[in-house]
Each structure stands twice: as C-alpha cells, then as structure tokens.
Image 1 (cartoon, helix red, strand yellow):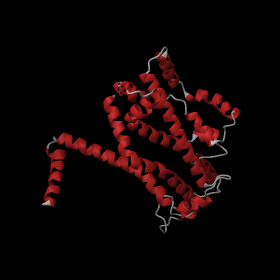
Image 2: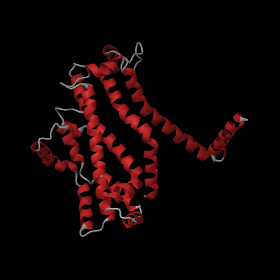
Image 3: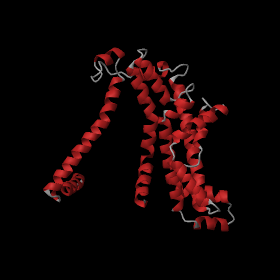
Image 4: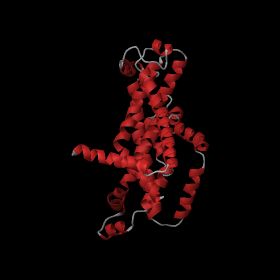
Length: 301
C-alpha cells in the first residue's frame, strides 16, 4: 500500500514531464536539463579537486595536481591551525578578526540603514524628499572616489588596523540595504503605528516593538547577506587592516608566500575550505528565510 502511494506521485510527475509535452517541448526540456547539469558539475568540480588536494603532501600535489591522493588524511586541516601563519598572526586570530568585523559591520550597516529607511518612508518632514533624492544620487557615485578621503580620515582618527574602528565605516545609513528596508517599510501599514500612539506608545517603542518585527524577514536576510559579503571582503582589510589581517587578506598573503616557494598548496587549500565553513553553515541554516524573502521581493517588485 505504501509503495503504491509512493509510485503514484512518481508516475504523475513522469507523465507531467513527458507524456503531456510535445516532442519539441521534450527536446527543449532535455537540452536545458543537460545544460544545467553540466553547469552544476562545473561548480562542484573545483570544490572536489580542492578537497582532494587537501589530503596530499606538497610533493604529491606538484606531481599530479588533479589526481587522487595516495591516502586519505585530514592532517592538513589540523596543520592549518598551527602552521598557517601570516606574520605574527595565526589562522585562529585571522578567523577571529573576520568574525568580529563581519558581525559588527553587518549589525551597524543593517541597523543604520533600517532606521534611516524607516524615517524616510514613514515620517514626512520639510526637505525629506530632497534628502531622499540626494541619498539616491550619492549611491550612484562610484565609491572609489571617496576612498582617499576615507583613508586619510581613518589615519587621522587612529582607526587604521583596528577591527572595531574599520567596522564603524559600515554605519552609513544608506546604500543598497537602505533601499531594501525602505521598500519593506513602505509596504507596512501606518495604522499599526497609529494604534500604538493611541495606546500611549512613543516613537522608539513603536519602531522597535511594532514596526520592526514586521520587517524581520527582510532584516534577517540583509544581516545574512551583509555577513557573507564582509566575510569575503578583501579590499577593505587590504586598505585598513594590513597589519591586523582578516582571513580573506591572510589567504591572499599566504598565497603570495606560496608563489615565492615558502609554503605548500595543500595547506593553503585546507585554509580556504575551513574559511568557507561559517558562510556555508549560515546559508544552510537560513536558506529558507533567505530564499523566501527573495521570492516575495520578486513578486512584489
């Protein structure tokens, strides 16, 4: 009985794919499926080769970079925490710098954008539309033009090579996160806030307890995207944290030492895969929330 109930959806699915399609539709479906399968293989293959290379010695890697290791071992993953050093900083210290920078920058970027978006979307005051237009125009300007001034400011304030100091640069209040939160708050009815005001609630209470929880889906998605972007960011640590590297900068500097012949690629690949774990774990945990908000945002747009 159970096997029949399982086979029935399979037959229905197979009939939907093939029996109800014309020969041309079947050919197109098979062609597109093959293309996507080949594309998936091109994405998985580099990770598979990288993982296999972590199990090799340096001599084995140079002998056959794409071959199978002589024996399966995870020794290089353990060595990454003891021998993967950049200057005076160990692998764990660089991971810690990345974690602190990613958490603080994500929180400050999303929190500041959330508050500014709420103000511009719900409070109409003199010159609010003008300021909104100015904010949009500033987003269109290339950020590379402001780097010299920001770099000098960081030096003058003695914030260079400070992870906490660099994270403060994320608290701009505008940018792409501002647009997402502005669109989200614009869809939330103001009647909720009016009801709270009637009950005696203030502006801060209404924002944090009434309006913000209704935007938690978008808020969580932006926090996740911001964390991933900051974790993988290389340019910001390269400019401001050259003496206090994050894992992204540390991997680059370790690769330079490889080219000079003072390190080995299996150890480098082990460090790369370990650095991917926090991002992969976060995505696996929150993938439903992230994809649901992307889908809903696309439907509303």
